[in-house]
Image 1: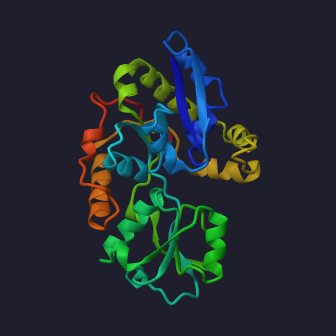
Image 2: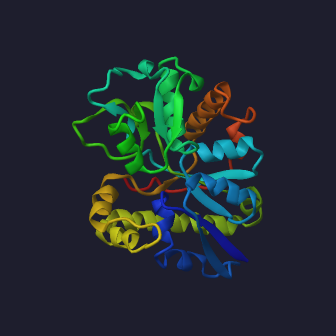
Image 3: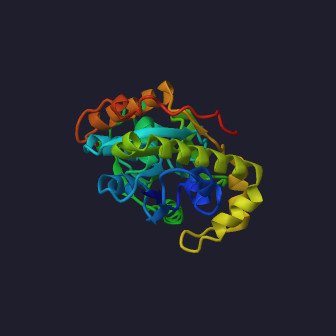
Length: 293
């Protein structure tokens, strides 16, 4: 069989795996005859590629598999990372917006459809503000969103960027609202029919993550060498050192947060239908080590 894995700029685990021999070693002796990393720029499209049968497995933040399940895409959760405490909901330091409730009627920049939509909906719910009470502005680039915030083109920004700038103020940090793990999911048919291959892929991802945690400088070089997806080695290394690495078994706590997200999306008109996220759980779930933090 040919194994096809989704690859986009924001899933660093899959990017690093694609540039090491780790996967090839784990697949030795399996039914896999060849591997293709299918490259695309927009992470949330992962579910579309699974729906089309173009890829067997991919990874994103929390939002895409929820909307994909609601759209009837047959997918299953296979693993997560630990939570990633990066970014949050921010405004300019001089903004009159003092708290999340003040976002009512304001323009909020985010990458719609990404995990940042989950972040924002949790923040709004905390302040009893609905999605229809704000003006979402879809901005895909951190640089463009940062510029828009500074120029007054948006009033607030839901971001996963590392913010260390006295001219920007947090209304809420990500870890105060959601856990924000990386989420790995597969086409249900692939998971059901090729369980051994799935286990090998996830084990390879976990090993690649452990290697990354132990070799941040070398991992930064691999990311920077990817001309299409880009990035600077000097910037990548501290980012790699700061974040958790290693995969985890899909937990009840993760599924509960996913269900809360799905319920909030439905309440705010962001989901096609009501879902039970447990319907997308792999049975039995893969048992994975606790990872490296």
